[in-house]
Figure 1 (cartoon, rainbow, N blue to C red):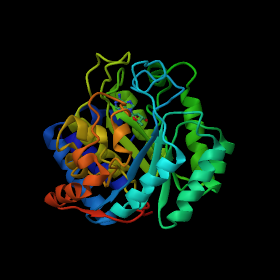
Figure 2: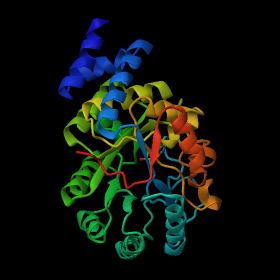
Figure 3: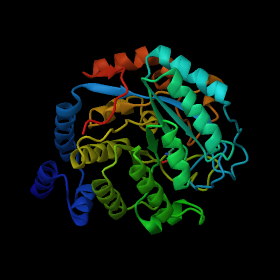
Figure 4: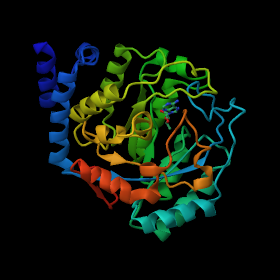
Amino acid sequence: MNHIFSLIDKLEREHSLSLSEYEYLISNRTDETAQYIAEKAVRIRKSIYSNKVYIRGLIEISNICKNDCLYCGIRCSNHTCDRYRLSPEQILQCCYDGYKLGFRTFVMQGGEDPYFTDELLCELIGNIKKAYPDCAVTLSLGERDRASYQRLFDAGADRYLLRHETADTLHYSKLHPKELTLANRMRCLRDLKDIGFQTGCGFMVGSPYQTPRYIAEDLQFIEQFKPDMCGIGPFIPHKDTPFRDYPAGSVDFTCYLLSIIRLLHPPVLLPATTALGTLEPNGREKGILSGANVVMPNLSPTDVRSKYMLYNNKLSSGGESAQHIKELADRMEAIGYQIAMTRGDIKL
Ligand code: 5AD
């Protein structure tokens, strides 16, 4: 019992643990230890970011994807998915709307849709940066080759989100079709960082076949990679995927991991994800109170939101919607936090 508290103290002091220490921490969570680590995580997060919560406008630019990841509702073999892609004009309109609402970061996320060539994206990024030079552009468009990432960076993109999904090769192969490899995912992440993007990795909590050992590997990878952002959220089954019958991950366990990640890499930008808010009405608040400091409201055109269904019942209305930023602000204020209308870069 005392061992786990001393491990948490060590993590706070040294920002590092061994694989077996992480595994112990993960396997021995209690309400008491979760509260103990959350308090430390909140304290360290406040020492760097005070009580500010950064907001990002999330634009889901396409649900067309050439990949067939077993967990994902927009996998190419899901023929019940109603496919769409936004035109560059529609995306610019989202930025226009978002800018007026106060957003200073736009995240363009989508499936791996071959329509979005380097040429098209570079022109789009250039146009967004020209119209809104005070805004950050974040891309979340999957695996591309290094030259492509370089072109997107040179066109003005600031950040790139690419979850590693799991840092274990065997686990990776159970979640993905054989064309996708952990080695290539890691190659992408290294290229992105090397090129100069603020880079985000991350993983799902409670994904099928996940073990404490695998999560320990994720934490060690994060400790070594030192990402600028880290997206972690509970796995939620999607009814038209092979993982339809697997249980969802837990909100409380996700929050525990948010606290651990805050302690092992204090400056990281850590979102309280949509998946967290989908499982529990106050899931995002719980995330913030565990050490998260970012939320990403939905800025996609309202008529496509229900089509970007990565998992069952994914939220896109209410406090999840960029248009309801006031509701989000009120909810954050109710727990002692303030949304920040700035780019919200990492403070290193
Ligand atoms: N449950 C939770 N998260 C999911 N993602 C994809 N499918 C699911 C699911 N069923 C996450 C992946 C991906 C991100 C965009 O969404 O981690 O990287």
